[in-house]
Amino acid sequence: MKRLTLLLLGLALGVSATANAQGLTMQMSNGWTFTFAGNVNVFWVFSKENTTAGDATNSSIRTGLLPAFATFEAKGKEAGLNLGIHIGFAPQIQNSGQAHDIFVGGIVAGAQIDMRQVYLTVGFKDGSQILAGRELSLFGRQAILNDMTLFGVGAVGIGGGQGGGTTLGRIGYGYLYPNFNAQVTYSTKPGEAQVSVGIFQPSILGGIFAASPYTFTKVPRLEAEFTYKGKSGKNNYMFWVDGLWQTTSTAPPASTSISSFGAAAGVKGDLSDLSVVVTGYIGKALGTTFIFSGDEIGTLDPTKGHKSDGGYVQLTYKIGPKTTVGGSWGFSRLKHSTDADGDENVTSNLYSYTVGIYHQWTRSLKFVLEGTQEGTTGESEGIFAGTPSGAKQTDVSAGFMLFF
Image 1: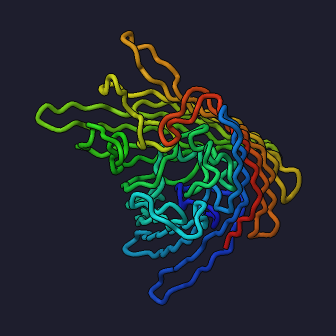
Image 2: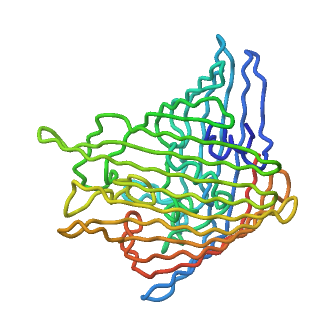
């Protein structure tokens, strides 16, 4: 596994990346190896919001879509099993427009140390593996792994010029964020074809701040992913399919339940110096932007889940041994059933266009320059509830990413 993949998300079993970081690996006396790797990234982001109320501009010095990372990993072999543990801290640098980190409603509204990864792995002789702990979920992970803005900023959210946390990239503008969740996942041996299936910590509907009646989770959430990688001459291609299902119930004794599901698919083709990615998703009772963060069910009829869909198209071209240029467009929609006939109305449609230059300055240092136009048709829901229809925002960013 390439070092950058381990660093970025430690994420996907068998996922490769295009650049290596150095890292630090030590051989222990007990036969185990210990590795420390990570990245620090810093971006200047300028945002200009255009609404009917007028224009508003913000500048911020912050982390991008990928937070900084400090990952610790230990691997060893016992009784024919390949054992490992992985711990990943993901801090950010900005203070959300304040001189110091502040607390709002008990939540840190500035720089955060996000404990994204805490998991163990058990590898078998046939190359298959069990991963148990906190790691990126299966549903939607390929969409974010193949998003060029993973190495940049992308969208920051309309009105979010001084926001805390990471930027959005294409989260809510082409795919739903899979999040890092407690899980037990089995994956077959990496190769041309790989299957991953797991049980996950289920989520209540509406998020922890909403007064949703669906707060009982009787069974784990199920997620699965299938990937296939092939080669034709000098050209490489990959396609994937992934899905999610969970059920959530109201309180007994008159308990009712609602099922959430999602399905996604995509394809990536590397044709000499040109790379093309096309991916999309559909869902029901998932919400939008950050999955299970709100607006999964109707207010007039809470027994029905809101439907959602979206996707993105991306083209990148390598113009030299160290420089890649790219462009992408994507959208995410949320539909409500609001009338007696059950007609579906698109109430939220976030979209964005992004262009970027990604220059590998040295083996470990990357320079990134991006521009994004983001907008909405229909009043936004979820974390951007209240954003007026027709609002637009231009984001320009430049910064560095140093991998070690």
